Length: 221
Ligand SMILES: [Zn+2]
Image (cartoon, rainbow, N blue to C red):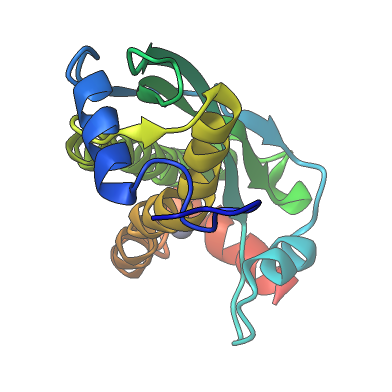
């Protein structure tokens, strides 16, 4: 090619650039992804009454809610980039070592203010809510295992080309676009399990706590 002043075809051809990236990647260790979980100690509060708790559940039907567990998950990510360069220094590439922590940032068990003075009913509802806590914890753990396996497969041999800032930007973009939706779907798997458990366990029967449970429920309704 004859270039006069400005050569539009300048720079290495893309095939040559690909080869340079491959060569530089051969020097890199395999990509690694680890995902760990951090559990929270549930905080029990009687700050809301049964009506306010029912509003939080979004259930519109005739119902009495004496307890509710709310959790939120936060995601922390730390990345170490292992980088290499082509011999002439013009092409850089990287593979990541990613450490992700999925945390239950908050876990609140709301018990209705109406049951605060009744130790027996409180214990019954708290026991029910603790199963929801267990489901949330198990779900977080399973999500971590699945996310870890999927990301490990994806990043083990993947090559991030460009400089450090470009590689980091790509990882962040991929987490938002590719992995956050995967994580959300994994966490929402608990919805069905909560519903199944609620359909099974209704805090006990009419005789629970010598009838106190039913008396309180009726007085609220
Ligand atoms: Zn429940």
